[in-house]
Amino acid sequence: EEEVQRKKEIIMKRKLEDSAREVHTPQLLEEQERLIATLIEAHRKTYDASYSDFSQFRPPKRGDGSPECRNATNPFLMSLLNSDMDELPKASASGAEAAAGDELSMLPHLADLVSYSIQKVIGFAKMIPGFKELCTEDQISLLKASAIEIIILRSNESFTMEDNSWTCGSNEFKYQIGDVMQAGHKLELLEPLVKFQVNMKKLDLHEAEHVLLMAICLFSPDRPGVQDRCRVEEVQEHLTETLRAYIACRHPLSCKHMLYAKMVEKLTELRSLNEEHSKQYLQISQDAVNKEDLPPLLLEVFGNPTA
Ligand code: ZYD
Image (cartoon, rainbow, N blue to C red; front, side, top):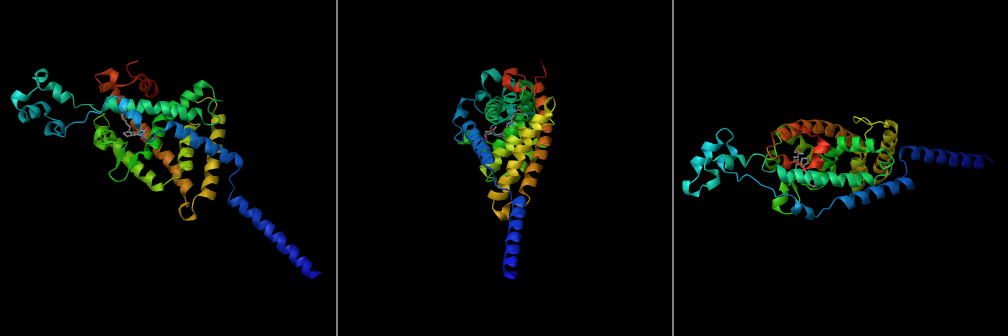
């Protein structure tokens, strides 16, 4: 009799332990599994890791690294001192064109890259469950506000810590800090941007975590102009819950410590990169002599100061 009672107690205790464990290590629900599969497929359809479309962008023009390119104060003098008179091209007898050609020389190519990437981000967004159900105005508000952040996140796939560059195939499509400076951006953005890329790389995210982070970033209810904040928040909470569950049961025990918290921290860092990019973009769009350098989609998403 006593023995039976003791066995009953042991079984009860085990049951309690099991349910307690379930609270702390949530299972991935079938529905969450499907969501992750959908997001991964959406990303794969919109991120071409062969970068074969890049040859369709206006070609990258890099300064040749000659002294006149680096000397910002006396570019005309520099180019005249360093060149043979007979070798001077006829159109730039004043030296003005050669020097001006180095200003924003990477802008057409990188503006095309960003415009292309925005189109891909839109394609990704449309495949996220819940996005299409929002009204068009809210879809636009979310995309406008998060486009550069999602581009920064997705670009981590091409970023390499070997030389801190975004390497998209050949040397022609390898982007270094200097290249982005030749599109008019400054170190106030580029220094924290490269640091962000390095720290992201070090998180060594699974593909599921990478795509969930991009989706969570898109569904931020606090973006300017969002009407139906509750709907956006609902979707975001569903995504974050899925991310927590994924990390809890799929990420190796030794590396999952604080991973979710670190990922949330990345979202905060993206906000400040976004803000700095906006400022520098405004300056660039005002400085750009050739307004065609900026594709129409880019002007619509980041703003058109001359409109
Ligand atoms: C991804 O969508 C696809 O990973 C590939 O301010 C390559 C890629 C790289 C992104 C980079 C590298 C993608 C160059 C510098 C960027 C960076 C992300 C943020 C800064 C993009 C895009 C270039 C910004 C250039 C200026 C554009 C304007 C709009 C004028």
